[in-house]
Structures are given as structure tokens and as C-alpha cells.
Length: 218
Image (spheres, rainbow, N blue to C red):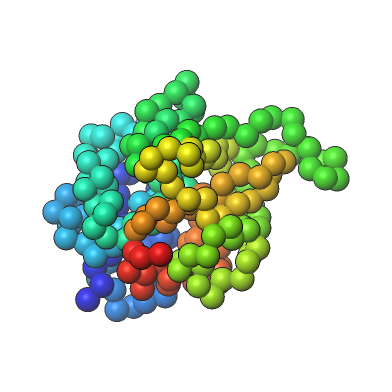
């Protein structure tokens, strides 16, 4: 049976993610936990997150989730969601600067205030609501998802991966909010998204379905 763990460090819409997973595949073995043994024994991991980065990283380090993710990096498929995606980079400028897990080189930056769209309308921060995701790389996780499909976002910060360094991730999805920003990135068996697939209706459910069958290969 497909053993799936949603990592619980107290910062995420965990039960919504769990219900969405069970909706697309009722035969999975699903656990929502921070237990190290269950995380190590899982076939695949989902790493969600909401809230302030400083609080998130404090719990991640206290529970040693950072070490568990580094161990799992080359062993099993991992899906990062929202702050879970941001925490995978080196550093976030949120809360006056927070060191993150460092699975990928890069930074997390805040959207600038006072920006306007093409209609001269003020863009609010946080970026909240539906937005297109342009698929910039052909990846198995985009299977049966039409390019420029719309997904649901809620965030004030976005990732700026350093794609020129060793161990860098590939930007596989971009969205626009005043300017283009990375909304999905991937490296080997890791796929991470800024949007919330569990809130993104049919396209989000398809992404989760793809993850449950993805072997971690590109």
C-alpha cells in the first residue's frame, strides 16, 4: 500500500491536504505526523506550511524535520506546499531574516508594496486568489494539467532560487503578480509549489493524484 505522510510541525492546513489526498485515492495509507520513524518509513512525503517563517523554522528544527527531509531528499518523492516550499531554500527575509533548511540555494523575498497591474489597479499584499501557472519545464507532475491552468495562492513572500549554483532546483512553473515569480520548482524527487493544490479544485486534485503515482524520476 502507498504510505503517505503529511509532515505535521503545527504549521499547515494539514487536514485539508489529507482529505484532498484521500479524495483522489482512497486506498492510500495516510498519516499526519511528526514521528521520525513514520516519516522515514513513508513511501512519499508532503511538506506543507502556513504562517510566519521564524515560527515554522523553530518547530522544524525542534522536531528535526530539517534533518529528516535532508535524509529523504534522494530516497522518496517529496511535495512542498506554500511555506513548506519556501522553507526548502537557504534564507527568508521574513521576520528580519531567518535561516531555512537549505535543500536548494536561494532566498525568499517579500512582494513590494504599491505595485500596480496592467489596468493600473493597486496589487494588494498578500497575493491572494486564483492565478495562472505557466509550465516552464515538462515535468511528470504536470501530467493532465493544461498549461496556464489557475491555482489558488495565499502568500506575501515568494522564492527566488539561485539556479546557477550547485544543487540548484529547476523552475518548473511561473506566475505573474506585477512581475514573474517562481510558483513551482523541482529537483530530482522533490517538487514544490507556492500555491495550495488542496484548495485548487480539479487542477490541484490532479497534481495530488500525479504525486501519488510519481516515482520521483523526471
